[in-house]
Length: 305
Image (tube, rainbow, N blue to C red; front, side, top):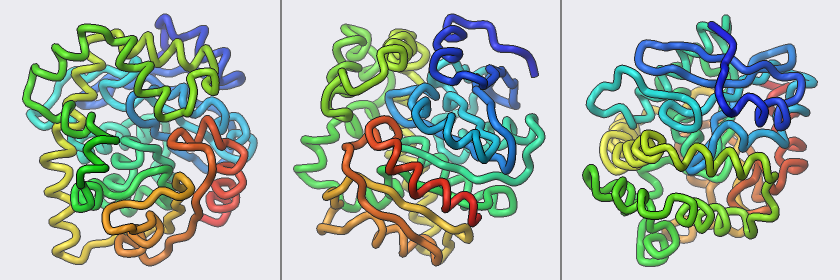
């Protein structure tokens, strides 16, 4: 493990004071992360189209009670995929790389908190690594197969990127390369309810990362797997009756339902026996726009588990 030396160093110091930046090489990736605090380890996994900067409003308060590890997902931010298998966007592969990160840092048992795509990696880790993941918190996400099950016209119009980014290489990559800043800002504007609600340094980090072609390619591979192997793994789990053994906290966008009018907590209760949670105001980017409410539920959940 060595100190990370990239253009993001100053941003990390601003967004994560008293954290250290690290770079860890795993079997298939070189992962960039920030680490801070003391106590039981908690792995924070961000979503699309962001970076670890998404956790800047919750990482500090969590670090007062826990050891917090916030990486860029493989291929996102400053993390690079260096030896990818064919289906390297799969959440099983990404989760395995992140588990190697935790093991390299000396953490064999830890909680996982995931937002958006990070939530999809997180629940796959919980299913695949039940002896290592002691608890799982889902922010604004339900399992991938449940998303596809409920997909309809409204879903397609609102979340068109699920279909666009999953198209075969290199159609979406070419489309995104035309004006990366425009596409990113449009996406974040919708997710946040206004770019002014985002920390300017975090927003600059999202833009910096999204301008990198390899990062945009990694996002496409992520969504391609979401329409392929990730869904197949989920369906295999459902057909075999396999469930999450860990306690699960579910926090979602207040008023948000999925296909058939289902609310997230009811969906997750089909995937795990011990599920709690509630809807929060603040839109999709809960860790940034509803940080106080997230922490109010997340800290006691992590203390109990």
